[in-house]
Length: 422
Image 1 (cartoon, one colour):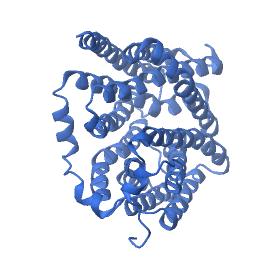
Image 2 (cartoon, one colour; image 1 turned 45 degrees about the vertical axis):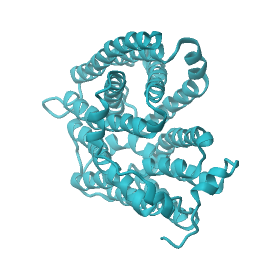
Image 3 (cartoon, one colour; image 1 turned 30 degrees about the vertical axis):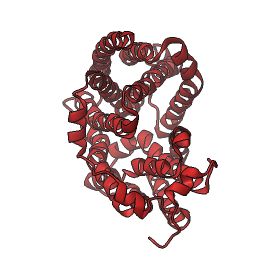
Image 4 (cartoon, helix red, strand yellow; image 1 turned 120 degrees about the vertical axis):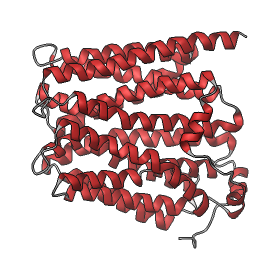
């Protein structure tokens, strides 16, 4: 896979053209990849709890968690391999791995096989960070932010459409979305192999600095108080939101009797709210109030919304209230999350932007691994079922975590103001 034409980093940097062919290809790659990823979330709980798997709420939590654990440990390894051997072969191999992982789940005859599919998918799921590195390779410093914005758009669009497609396909069989996701990844890998040029040149390869281990980088960076506080708030926020992501489908099935198709449409609704909030509302609010204020208000909104979920049911507000609480939660998250990443970028040196934001994403990956484990323990009762008490304690814990995040956010906001004033 080294016989394809390469992109000269300096030539790309000198060009004023933004929508280059490689950038469009990588946009499509991310978009298709996230459609497959987004399809899994509303379907996996239903799939795993049916025969022959008969997974308990705890086992479903572990299924969600193990993917993120694999990503946390293997994403840096794939990143180092992409520095050494190029982005294109790593993207190709990781997309093939995703296809194998989805196929394993769809074809699985036992719960162990479902776990194997999630493990394979998590190990090879570092293609997102490799795609980000590719964008950095082929864009100028002036266009870097636009390139990452294109990445965010592809990510968001794929994640919005994925659950809706999964909902439609689930009507033809609960396993069908996994086969479709496998086919998407396979087609994506083949197309990428034939049309995507390599972005890493020999000169770039020789000038790349030696990377530290992810944990070592995280611990070293936390010596700076502002950066440590931002990451603490972000870790708590993502942990809480990951509990919701895991528990939401099981909650709506238990309380409202919603099926996989209906939950797919609910996740589609959440995605639309998120895109509107971040794409239209976020900018003006940041200019008016600033990021620290949006982090604090977002934490308040999320804490209240999470606490409200157990009190929503067919006799208490129905689907309309469920949509309202879900939209409110999505709005709060859409205010707090981008504000935290923006603050992490602002307080970091220009020469360490990639490192700083990489650490923030590492913290988020760790939180996505821990959150479903907490939810899996709390949502499970003695007979391995969901009941009203397990629902209450699960969402109460998620809300309590957000309250701790709120206290840390208030402390950071006051500290940040004193630093800015000084």
